[in-house]
Image (tube, rainbow, N blue to C red; front, side, top):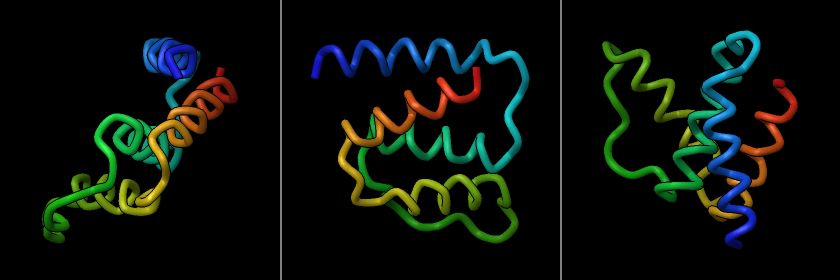
Length: 84
């Protein structure tokens, strides 16, 4: 588990130095996997329709609800690797 966490932290650092900015759907997936890996399942109320960015982030995170933290970490690592 410590090895996975180290790889995850490395991928988080690498995500800030990608050669080009990913499209919005990919950015939402990165966000959702990161939040699931670090905070667990989404909680709270879904933002209103006036907060389109917050709503999109909430929905993306809700899509990975129930995924184990270590599984989310591995998917995050794999996604960042594919973008390099």
